[in-house]
Length: 388
Ligand SMILES: *Cc1c(COP(=O)(O)O)cnc(C)c1O
Image (spheres, helix red, strand yellow):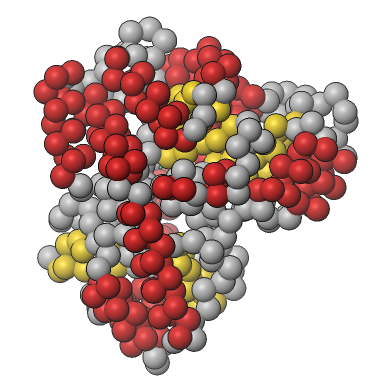
């Protein structure tokens, strides 16, 4: 028996069933228009909401960071891998978010894997929205706490689950702030009310909320004015912020606690200086140019109105994430292919990521799209849908 035989068999099976999807390779930098397979396409698939990923200020900062501080960080945070610039970045994110302190992780994914098991363990209980992101689910599993799922965005269902816990159990309520497949926003005020009634901690994963919701993109907690009522905010630096990484925002005590307990902090090397300086530049741009967030929302309204006028089903989206729900997986894949033929890059999403009858293409609007890009994309949607 070939030890890796199951791998070959799996890939062969995917190919035979037409399910093997080669990685799309960009032959240009990230941006509103990208090149794939030698063709320029309008890019409606990346999370670069504010057009920061390839911004001149970020490019310059990356080079300056490497030039001054070198290539790698050389150690984990707790040993010798905390450079002056790491600390500076964390203070700057804290000032921007309006919290006491932050702690940066290698990615948002690592932030969830590190933070959730540091907050709860065996004998404790996690209350988790049924549509939470994979990295929350994995963090919950790693913790060994009991996991109780509540119905999506349903504070009454959350209350029922909380009522079934014992009073002495430590409880963590965790939810996405913005849900990545539907673009809807978690009902955080109701979730906080429910959690407070039962003495539970609240953690919000704001990966798609950071840089998008709230004043100047400060996130969903700011959007709802819930400062002080959400103990743990997780944000990503890899989407709207245009760089790479994740952060936990909260109290100084929370930061101090996690520097002693979160395993990606203790056992995995910190960001290279170029990444840190790229992120610092992004926070500066975001602070200086909050109008980028307004442009993002203007673009989202324009694009979504255009698709609605064509009679498309955008589900429950309340953000720039624009799902176009078409039903069967085959229809979603065909729509994505037809859009690509018409110069628009939009990826399809099907079961098991979304329900079987709700396959979709998911279009991501950016502040960097011109009105021309969006008008062209709307036309392409109209044509591609006809005769599908
Ligand atoms: C993208 C995402 C993450 C992971 O963030 P990375 O920085 O890309 O690792 C975590 N949570 C949610 C809800 C996300 O959408």
